[in-house]
Image 1 (cartoon, rainbow, N blue to C red):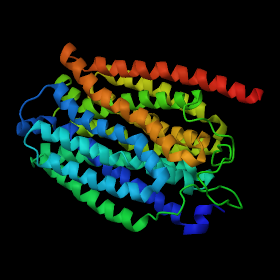
Image 2 (cartoon, one colour):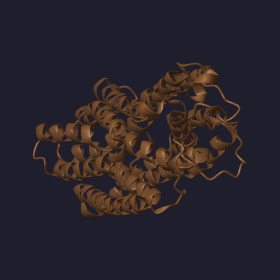
Image 3 (cartoon, helix red, strand yellow):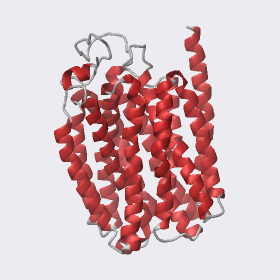
Image 4 (tube, one colour):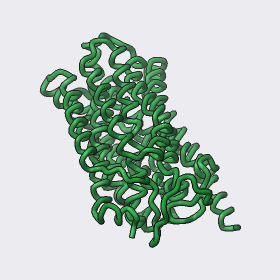
Length: 422
């Protein structure tokens, strides 16, 4: 029996999965809703370059990245609930600043605050999933939680496109909807999530009293020796997540603009085409999470195969001659891309990190991923301004992805060989 089940009942882990699924829905509504309406935003704040518009997303991720490691430390010290609620309040304030902005500088400021607020979420959500969900269901439940981002992306992209480009409502309409969803989620977290007296749970039949200051050797939740926070294996996971997120976020941020300006696809279709990624992301992530739970010793191989597929699909998306073929490529990318890699990587990290520092390890992991989300929007915007073609930014993202996939494969093969030798 899990210690968490003894304390909170057998169904508490299901409440955790539902709560953090809803959290990703709300966060991704915000992340996706602005990209399809950059043109309309400029009608309010004045004309700006692609670089300047890309900064909206980058400011969000600056705040988000800055909070990853501190929030992980805070979660391990004070518990998830005490970190989540202030984060959501700050997220709400930042989003409200964007809704009320008439100058681009206030949008930048609001995006920064929203990013700081959301920075508390990643370590809290996946550390609770790692600690409370039964081990045999961990990857699968992580995929369920993570699939909230796919639903949120659909709602943000499509909702914003329809409300603004079809119904001709102000672009702020979707922003106010996002604010309402965040407020409701905050009240739900207050009710649903409980702060245990100790965050570290033992996956044993006879749980020990949790003492963060004890001198036991670092172990994983399964009782195996843990990797150090910056061991070669862990760093290879961090860096491959950087490249995975880089490719994904440049698609989410700039594909609608590229379709409108370079492919002559206008109206709500720009947001809808990008949202196709999310349609197949859920079944894809659930399938590969199930495979990850079933073949727990094969997680690195699953990661490598999915990353190679992502590389090929990003390249093919720029080669697609028409919207029909592009739609097909995006659907396949959704099934095999970032959303499918996420639960396998998260499970792989939590299997190997010190059980007393799960949130910190996940915070460092996501720090690398979110760091790429700062670079991708502004670097792609810069490439578009200089070359006049956004596709070169996508090719650069694909190159980063395949290079790091090769490095990840070499590192994990050597580490596996060293472990077998012991």
